[in-house]
Image (cartoon, rainbow, N blue to C red):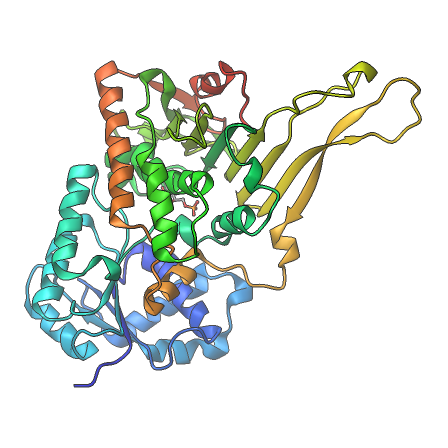
Amino acid sequence: MSRKSSLILFGATGDLAKRMLLPSLYALHKDGLLPSGLTIVGTARSELTDEEFRAKAKDAIEVHLAEDRYDPAVMDGFLAQLSYLPVDVTTPEGFDDLARAVGGGGGDLSIFLSTAPQFFEPTIAGLKSAGIADGARIGLEKPLGSDLETSRQINASVSRAFDEAHTFRIDHYLGKETVQNLMALRFANMMFEPLWNAANIDHIQITIAETVGLEGRGGFYDDTGALRDMVQNHMLQLLALTAMEPPADFDATAVRDEKVKVLRALRPVADTEMVFGQYGPGSSGGNSVPGYEDDLGKASDTETFAAIRAHVDNWRWQGVPFYLRTGKRLAERRSEIVVQFKCVPHSIFASRGAKLTANRLVIRLQPEEYVRLLVMAKEPGLDRGEVTLRQVPLDLSLSETFKSRPRRIAYERLLLDLIDGDPTLFVRRDEVEAQWRWIDDIRATREKSGVELKHYSAGGWGPSAGIALTERDGVSWND
Ligand code: BG6
């Protein structure tokens, strides 16, 4: 049977497929970016016909894709590329049917795994024994383990069927335009990199704040918590991109080599440098909302907020704290990186009564997309003797500057890169393992030192201990 260009989606009836994967594939199809003739085979346990799956896919796309990306005229063409095969991944039979559906394994086969973690190993074993894994690429959605040990087990079973070059571990933050823009900002401009070090930077803040609560994911979230759900992956990837040395080339090996050096240089965190919190009742978007335990329906000591004072122990970053903060049910939805520069070494304006504020670079990743550099300027006026200076923003609004370009879902980029076989924006095994090593150490310290879980009201900025974590260094969060 001849080899076709195919994509197999495991977990095709799941939440991620509905919210992100199917709308992304449709949007890529609409823009003519998918390889011509690509067949997309959805699989899951439910017994569905092709027609039923297509109807579900259409509904999901209509609900979840932004209106301006939707074009009903191309829907039928997209749905015709979709088919569905029920597969019970715990038995070998389903994989033989799958092999027939995609004409055996091959270089132009991509597989996307977004299933519950317990199905990972049987799925990979089934793909291998049916010959589907040979030469194919596999995209792996989190959670990829819950600590270093379990992540190693998963990586080991993946590596028995797929080599590392064909293993695409997803961190959807790397698919976001603004995250990729961080590299453009740092390495395509002359003015930042010479200042990007401990001599000129006072500290860095990385925040991923969410207003949502559990969103019906109680079972998964309660076993995971903010540290493993957000810090282990997204926040550490942002930290690595912010702190890494300039790669020699924008390719998968060079970029990931530099990121992993940063991840390996992370200093173990002291018990006084970590804060964990859980939201209680409060408000969100003007409505009262219940606390975490009410959302969950049982008592729990899982953290929904984490703040950490991290350090990268290398020459470039010695003495520069990286304050990390993430939480659910916070005051606003906001992801950003704040680079706080030091003050100028000497103010020539001091004798004229002017106060200087140090420069600050704010890279807002979402919901707005901008880069804002706060600089000092003289207030207009003919004051005699005195000089009045004020901090003003130099703004680059990415959404405004590039407003003619569609705002793409992160998964559009990631699915396309998986299909094209470009692993630059995927996480390599050594990175994941370095991330887990650091997180496991934090969990062990937390346990050993009995770091308490603090409570915070929904709708605020987390427990006061999270604020104290920076204030005792004389630093305020950029709120
Ligand atoms: C996921 C986490 O990885 O990222 C969720 O599991 C979180 O808990 C989500 O809500 C946040 O992603 P984004 O793209 O909305 O910032």
